[in-house]
Image (cartoon, rainbow, N blue to C red; front, side):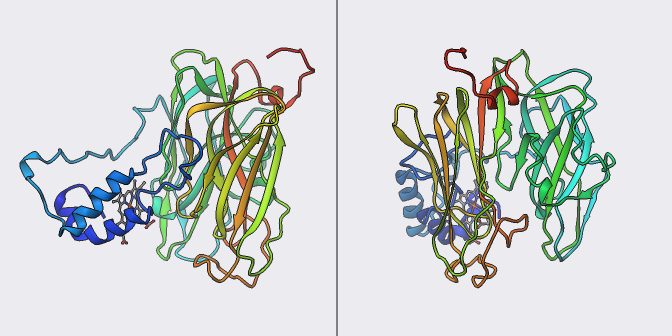
Length: 376
Ligand code: HEM
């Protein structure tokens, strides 16, 4: 429902009061004790009190003369007009019901030179059937999905889920804001790269069609920092039946200096909470983000206000908590032991994190530890 005007909002006053008091709305689930995020649109205690007081007072209109102008929302791109739009060549038919394997659609970029991308927006044409979309960058020479014809969707298996080591350009989930990196920080797309668009369509009771597009804006000058999306994950867990608070961890040692720019925790229907922590080489520890409660319906990226600088040797840890008990209203089957899998009734544990490294370094350079004193 729109909440643009007084007339729109008035009938929802009670529901608005409840949603803001319980912090279900606006959707934002970062524990305020840790980190500061530039896309944090949560309300202050003062604002919450004001909204609740308005509802309690019978939701009066106030003076219409002094009302602010209604917010105008754009129907098209949220980013400025893209320099290049890459899209699926045809519509995908989403059935009304049943399980749909992840679909992979190859879209050649046609780039004849290496490009630096400053902004990316992923726009499904039919958001009601898109559970998520991951845009992978398949560089020339990669054999991944080499059997697929450009433009013709192919079903993928579990080995394809993580993109077979290929870089990610962007991720779309409902409520996601486009990727807009600071000037001087950009993602590289090599000449001859193909987009591999991973689409997770979910049947919602009504058949539909979707044609997702990706709009990009190129950097105006060569950047000094390159953005990489890393995906620390734990794929080997077994969540016992009925367990209300099962913890799964993953940890990696950061091989070279870097800076964190955003987080994107990912679990499925049993996901309950997610946490990112670091232990610096000095031994000092810090919690960078705690998403609690984690909501499957609201998979948000958390963009840090100031980059978090990590020296080489920092230990980067993620913890996920799962609720496989009957108390979890989203739990498809509390009697099941749950393992890693692509579908929502299976589970995942991925602590996506976007980092910025020196623009002259490749992904491989970043993952190769340098001998002490080697610089950078
Ligand atoms: C102060 C700001 C906001 C208020 C007061 C508000 C209010 C509400 C209320 C009252 C409901 C529940 C309706 C019901 O009872 O069924 C709701 C649901 C919803 N809202 Fe908001 N909302 C806000 C911000 C947002 C934002 C920023 C988004 C999108 C990014 C959003 C997207 C949704 C969606 C998709 C639902 C339905 C699914 C769900 O309940 O999670 N809302 N909102």
